[in-house]
Image (cartoon, rainbow, N blue to C red; front, top):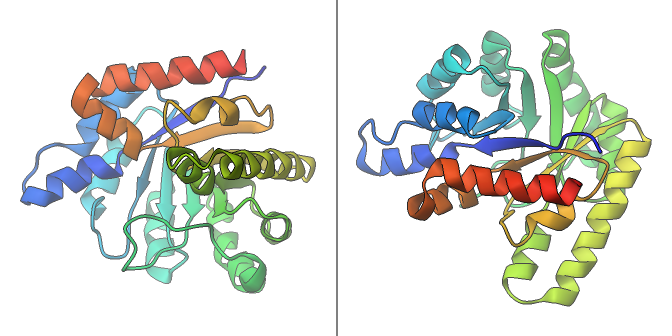
Amino acid sequence: MTHLRLGVNIDHVATVRNARGGIYPDPLRAARLAQESGADGITAHLREDRRHISDADIEGLMQVLTVPLNFEMAATDEMQAIALRHKPHAVCLVPEKREERTTEGGLEVAREENKLAHFIAPLREAGCRVSIFIAADRAQIEAAHRIGAEVIELHTGAYCDSFAEGRFEDSARELERLREMSGLADSLGLEVHAGHGLTYDTVTPIAAFPEVKELNIGHFLIGEAIFLGLKPAIIEMRRLMDAARA
């Protein structure tokens, strides 16, 4: 089995920092610690309202990281300009609404094919690996393939939420959908990533999908870090992922 990469999302270190308006805790310190703990990449979402990650955080991450930065962003002119200035290893397009607490579902690609195809073209030309965060839906995956995306990240939130709520038949159906759509995306030549809501209790089945090359996990790890410390929290997630892969 190929090595399953772990991307650690540090957004919510910035959420805690911003609650007091100071400089602690420092997301860059969290990123460095994640690297040391076995993370294969760092994910950060620069939202339009800057509710957690800031422009200065992105600047700092580009300077200090020795692993790839996965820059999550909305498909806006402002974010495109920022991405083209920094040229991170990867750009992941996500849907964004000001009123949402967190990303609610995948990007609507099928209805916006032409617009998104033109949007990602300069990012690809700049050398960024373009990823699209989408639901496990055939139409969205096929549209992502048509517009020239290299990677899709499947939204695992419905699977994780139904599992957490004890709706195990629903979670099993969501898991099977994720399994089928991972296979479809792989057959189209897309690299398959997954993320959103994954925990120690839900990561194993997803990590076992042979088509999945990367998991991006953040909120749960930052939450566990309160109790365990960030390094032990990441090490345990890495252990579960590796065991599932084996």
